Image 1: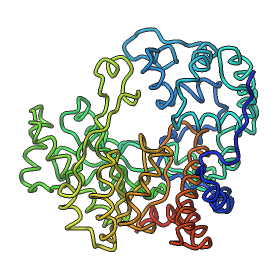
Image 2: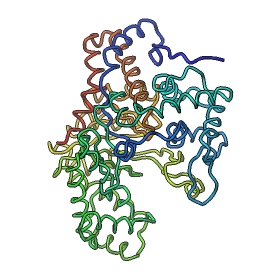
Image 3: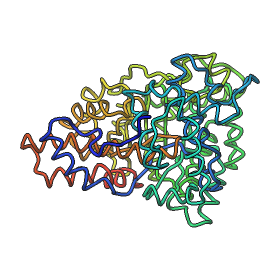
Length: 472
């Protein structure tokens, strides 16, 4: 049977001269600590510090990058252990789930998931066999033995993975109990919350009124009025700051930031809270208004904004009905950002108290819109290639289209944006390799010296994320 061998030069450029220089650059940055300021590992993973359940629950069930690929080939998510919320059956035997995954290994050829999974299996779990139907059980047993080891508990892996700091993503209504436990255990400066108010931004969400009520309960502020609603959000932000938060996170469909007249916002808020309906235009206007108000509050409390619009969530209504949100059926849409962000940037773009990091999954806006915005507004940093663009070719295209206009030092560095904890080192490693390859080309074209390339690679991997996410 074929054995796993990770090539030392994997993902480095093919031309020999460029690869040689890339290797020199990569070797200088590969062991730098990881700064993980945008991700979705749940805080209870670290607060409870329990052993991971088994290989399937660690590597497959929580990772929509994995099960969406199999779903595209007709494998129902339920067969991969994804829980159903409609009462239907879902596979509960983890070994069976693992066998299904291994038998489908060839589906990941050419994808970044293949790179991440190979790195995890070999570097993290010591697997030396290529996944297949024949090797599935042996690999399962090897991974299971690792996760049973006390040295593989989540807190221990923070050290093993060289994670200096990691942020979770938490609803505005979160009581932050897990983060309080972490702070009591001395990890409050290492595992940080991130404030995400998306559930409160869209008036047409079925749970909006319940979420507003939850906001009132957790904040202790009456949300019966629009002004009370804003004050409750301000109070929750203060609680997040107290818990160590450095940033907010906003995953709106559109990038609009036009503020509403306060009287109009008050009337709309009251109407919907009282059971009335909002038109589609009013829903979008309220969401845009909330982004503007969040920027106002960032100037007050120093939290760095992260805005990542342009994804139509839960594209399949039947999958959403069966499994809920975040099940791989989120699809990018074309996103206009220049006009959409102008109200926010016109007001706050040169304010030294403000910082916003802009992400996109619409590559067409890198060179046309986002690089010019980041290359002129001092408050703006351009976020890393994210989600569907977190791939070797996606990252190369990002550097090629953004750097000439934005420069390296208006970038925010890398974010891994993952729920799959064990994949974090693999994702950062791939970014560092692609970065080294791009910088090597600039060295060979006599546009950078080797020393400058090494310094830039270290800044992108480590220093720029720390600077970009530092509270203002």
